[in-house]
Image 1 (cartoon, helix red, strand yellow):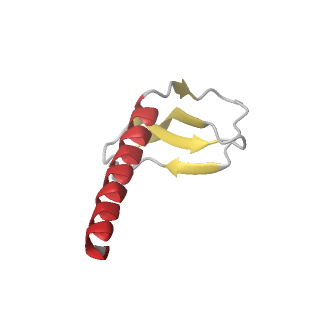
Image 2 (cartoon, rainbow, N blue to C red):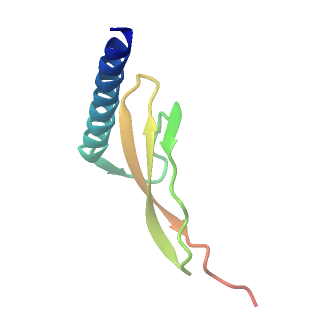
Length: 88
């Protein structure tokens, strides 16, 4: 009987984790992308996802996901210089 209860609990736990991951993925997809402008006042409390800088020679847009001090998630798009330029 205990084994059956543990098996049922494990199954319910797996379903709950899968639903939570699905919900967080849908939340991130529905966020509006804000484009960074010079002197913009940003409220960044916690960086959730920072971009990998591409191996290109030139300026490219990247996106960072973060939470502000109220716990609201944002996606910020800004320009960076790629890592693919060679000196010499």
